[in-house]
Image (cartoon, rainbow, N blue to C red; front, side, top):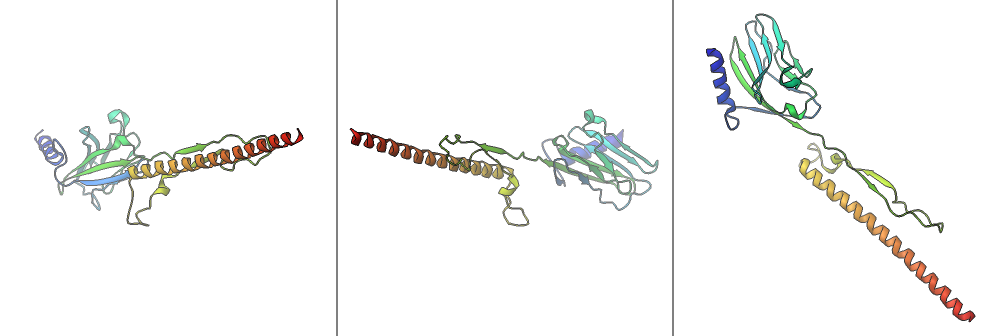
Length: 225
């Protein structure tokens, strides 16, 4: 009981009441990918004991007892949030979370006792994939006079948000999700404006041709009279 009290006290000092205190490793992962939290051990000793805690819910998710050769994964806790997602390295004790979701965001704490005591914390963040917008552009159908259909009609354009930003390896500037969305909206608005301008121009040309035709018919009628 006393050891558990000391552990909770250490966690309180590490995590804090209003934020993170002490050394915390920040880890980012894309949604659906795997993330590994390393113990930095090459091999566990026979007297080592390791625990992994999900501190957002103050819940024990993994327990390793090398003396008893016991590896326990509590993936049914928290309504199965970690079900079939926790993988252990039986040699180092490192923890891998597969198929990550936003519900796995939070602070993970490693507690190690045995040959050497250690306490480490990881703050895991999950980057959510943004959907690729699909913009459909329609224009009025062409007239029955046999004119060629407008080539910009009935087009569907897929805009990939990844093409709007340079990657870090290709450019010094890397835009974040917010900037990418803004660029995407501006690109879409420019495209729609261009389509509208072309449609107005085509309509104006057809209207002028129709007016010229009516003028010629009116003039011809006057001559016959």
